[in-house]
Image 1 (cartoon, rainbow, N blue to C red):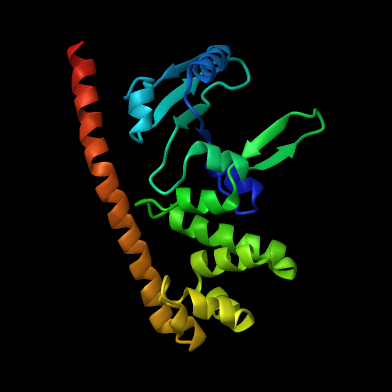
Image 2 (image 1 turned 45 degrees about the vertical axis):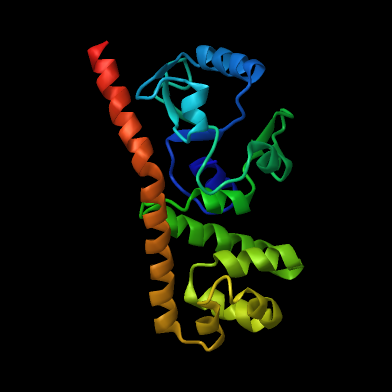
Length: 228
């Protein structure tokens, strides 16, 4: 659900870690711990692996030391502020395989874009790259679902103008949900850039508000570990 998935979708991002979203249940937890043991993965930060903490939105971070994966970081989550339940994401995942017939399950690009809506500045160019790459790949096969995705998530003025020109009816139907589409229809690029920036700042504020109570919990976890 992170940089490795972005690479697959053509929005290259240099990443030294692997970010995973997974369901938590006793059987899956057992399989997860077996995999972490094989990787010789040690937890490197708070919180501890706790299904309750994961269910509240925390991530658990590990560093691997097994031969071949020395230094690899693995970050695990079970829920994200912008994402639906795991079962929904699983149903619409992208699956790829290698010559060895090992299947890799990758978060759908629509969900990956939502996962990247964070307070970190570096994530927003990646959203733009993901949507642009998806449009380039499927512009000749523009289903209603894809058009809706592009119009809702495109982050460059030029692409938004092109989308509104090619799909004016769909754009008009979405204006209530995304008012800046009106600026794209009128080709007001300067105002559109300002509106796109405002979208980013509003989403970053929502992300900060979401993480504030979790951040306080992390501080409490750190204090407890120092005492122990």
